[in-house]
Length: 207
Image (tube, rainbow, N blue to C red; front, top):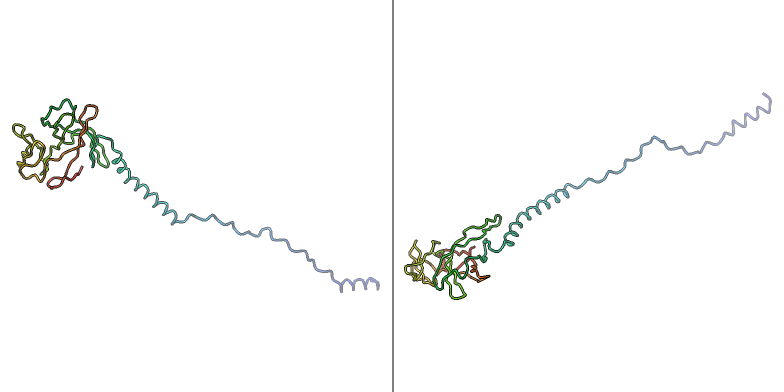
């Protein structure tokens, strides 16, 4: 080796090349953080929804019978009086009491039974007006009949007596015969039939 070659080798040894400052590439295989999963529905929210739906169904079950009762057709008896067609006006003789059955639809909160015998009434015609009284005795509900010679009414069960206009005359009945509203429509007598509490002095409607 010549002297010049020796000097060049010495310079290379004393003057090293600068380090490679190129940044290291990220590891391509490094795992990335997992994506966030969608939040699951709250159990409490689901339970609240379920309870609310159940309450709505229960409320509907209670309200439906009430609606059916309110919306019941004319000529149906539930817990209120409705007009029932009884007989033609011309079929009723003047002044003489005549008993008639009351037929119509009977409805409670859940069922409707059609064309039932609901009770009986006594009718008395005075010209173009008609007086109606229920045929149930206010004492215990026995059927009131017309007395001898058509002079008044009587209860065969406990001997209560009533005048032709229904006033109490004797016996255990606590009040007079119960009167009912009437009207004439298309030539027919219609009666607002209802029932009243038995065994009390006051006239209390019960259905």
